[in-house]
Length: 164
Ligand SMILES: Cc1cc2nc3c(=O)[nH]c(=O)nc-3n(C[C@H](O)[C@H](O)[C@H](O)COP(=O)(O)O)c2cc1C
Image 1 (cartoon, rainbow, N blue to C red):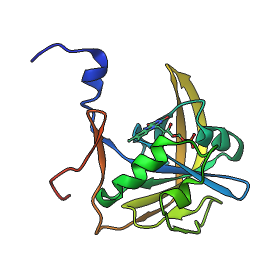
Image 2: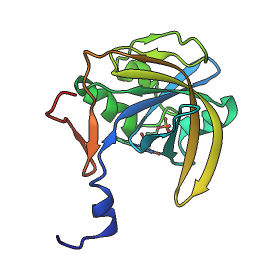
Image 3: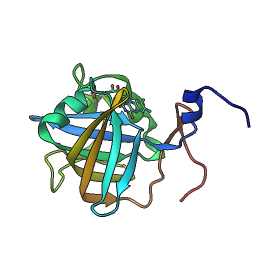
């Protein structure tokens, strides 16, 4: 095995691709997030790495709730649009042509056509390195088993070939 640059090594971690949504008043914003995983069974919690300067974090810091929408392989265009521009400048819901439905436990809508939608409440924020770690407790979950996960691998979107 060949020794490589630290970042190049870390890019071999296979990540999911999600849209993380938050509500600033009546404005719905989403950002593409790949640094995301489950961190606890009881209660069910997840962690994500997010830049402190992101508009999405600015909103979550105030509202303390968000929705994680795990993308289907067919939704790579939404991942690119929502990960390429800040919601401070554009309405990403209409730019990415996303359809939303109301959530049950939080004010942030769910995204249609995804593999899963996870309604979350912010329980903790840790500062470490150049990104924040947000811990979210999942308070409602929805899945569509006909969908397949879009992934992030080697700093690119990746479509796993094997159907789970
Ligand atoms: C595939 C992909 C994965 C991304 N993963 C992350 C991530 O894990 N954490 C993060 O802070 N930004 C991530 N980004 C960048 C944000 O999505 C991007 O900065 C976005 O414009 C932030 O939007 P906002 O300012 O509306 O919150 C990713 C972008 C792409 C395209």
